[in-house]
Length: 266
Picture 1 (tube, rainbow, N blue to C red):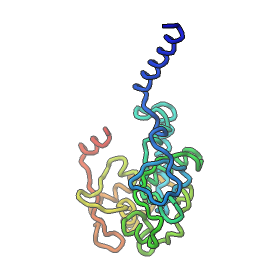
Picture 2 (picture 1 turned 180 degrees about the vertical axis):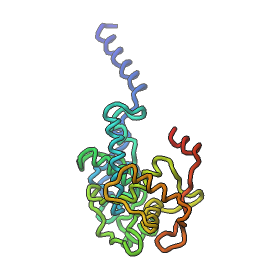
Picture 3 (picture 1 turned 90 degrees about the vertical axis):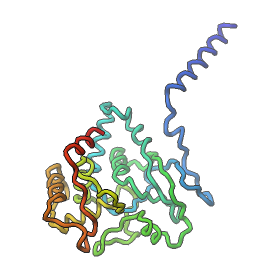
Picture 4 (picture 1 turned 60 degrees about the horizontal axis):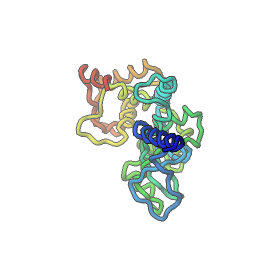
């Protein structure tokens, strides 16, 4: 065997070895979304530009988004034990999406996660993200009625409801709701859980509405003390859930100290 052939063999073996120890990137596994096919099989996982995601709720909790951006900064500095890079984090997220009229991609969850990625990349609309198409409703004349019937959208509560045409056009236009932020952060920190056995869509939004009715007052820009203030009201026995027009949900489940400790270890 010639020296040249030996070198070629070594390079081939090295390449095979690397392919065994280095996993393929998410970009290599997940293809771009198909362009305007007649029919889409569902579910279908593919990639689109983050600027093509259309929110299906009018607000997010900005403090919660900022918290997630801070976590991305930790990854950026190489201080995360779970993610090597921010790109790894982004590639491991997937947004459930309904394809609607005009071939628009309507996200039905993960508004806070995608908003944090949007903010981290300073509103760059071309950042690629993974989506999972769960419905192809491009030809439905009752699109928004179907979206509401399936709890794929949150348009507010009675007396404070918006029209679908008033929804933000992209993640950068989502407004801030400090009450939703305080509830979301209290849940993320493991201080309470949704009631066991209850399947209530948009529970955190509805819990935030309850707290407003109970008299909670928060500024637009909250901090940790406001989250603790919110948590105190959530568990205050003088407030009752489930018996008013604006607060029809059951009370959240209070966790034991052991359960909170277990949450923090995850």
